[in-house]
Length: 572
Image 1 (tube, rainbow, N blue to C red):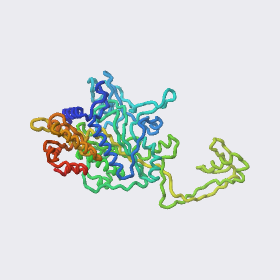
Image 2 (image 1 turned 135 degrees about the vertical axis):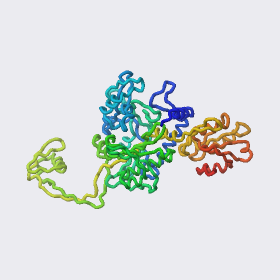
Image 3 (image 1 turned 180 degrees about the horizontal axis):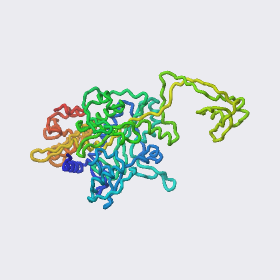
Image 4 (image 1 turned 90 degrees about the horizontal axis):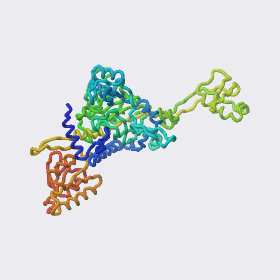
């Protein structure tokens, strides 16, 4: 059961320590917008950097960056202008607006799949009250598009545009460049991190539902007839999976990714591979593995572009929350953009194992007759004959030229022939596998899972047991006192640590050493290094481990060596 008091205490600590705070607070704040303070911004950067490195390590995926402002034509083609909606209802008494499915979530296992009539019936039949005023007067629910509109340009010359609701469309626009970059060879992928924007009807649950949020998405382009060879670990680590129940009750199945694919529970091996890689990332940044599950979308809730989709849900103080979506988007996006842009540049070439012989019937032109008859139009006639997809049953017939003019083709002008040619390959539209990560939701769960409350010597004590890979700093240097040279020694050591590649060290000399240890623990710094009188005599320091407060004495030169090799834990 959700511990509201724990959420309050955690949120208060995050605000106090400069991790996550309400945005524009001195003006009353804005629902759905947050600030990352100096500590939180460092954690966010570390999480994103871990994500980028996680996907780019094998060289088949590259990072790109595209605009956050997107022309309307792109989002019409993608379906967002017509499809990117949530059902909204208003309280008839106080006029507050709410997402209708959220009001109904305690009365249906998956209200996302319901239409407006079904949700309206739940609101009425269950006498659901307005969270603001307690009334039970709801307007009929209706779709509201979630995109923030804007204009590109000024006055009458301006074009309608939107703040991007996802980063994916920018990567589809860059497909021709990516295809060239990878030397016209599939599979390959692109990743992008950055801001997304959704005008949420009723933002809630702090970092869970925001109007401006941090996204990280991957588009992996594949040949559906020659899917990539992927390595799914043979390890028997048990994962919680909830497949589409197909109208029955949902069931949690526990087995490994390898077995789930072998047994057909996950039908697409490439999708299964990205589920497995998503699991690896989340564990590496500090998510509790016992609080992760993968839920397959039901057919009725599937996105308009998807053939299959799994949500990675994480359990925290707000219950099970979708934090990652892994979808097989098929060729929907590339085909749609080709159609709306009149472009044929969003394809790939598939080489056949052996050349194929293709035979077809054609009307072979008799140029000695066509030329004198059509004179200047002869070229257009030849071109139109070559482009004929269906041959006429009888001659003469009317041939439509590309300029819209019709001409009569008689029997003496052409000859029916069967022609054969060798075909080495064909053009096709790639399919796309997309893992899409909500970075803010993942950060919230990292903080939630890392947060511990305990008592020490009769006093309540908090700490964040963050993974070292996402901690805001690697170490903190603490002079016992700011006198007798301890402060100067601490500053010199801090400078030496920060000069090391990839190492971040902080320094704190304010108030008692106990207070400083507590502050460092609350922001998740794994190692504290104390400079005292003995340091001045023998060049040794005390290293303190955050998770159990254990301390050990070591030489400065040994500490520097261990920090440089990333192996401070070997001291203990």
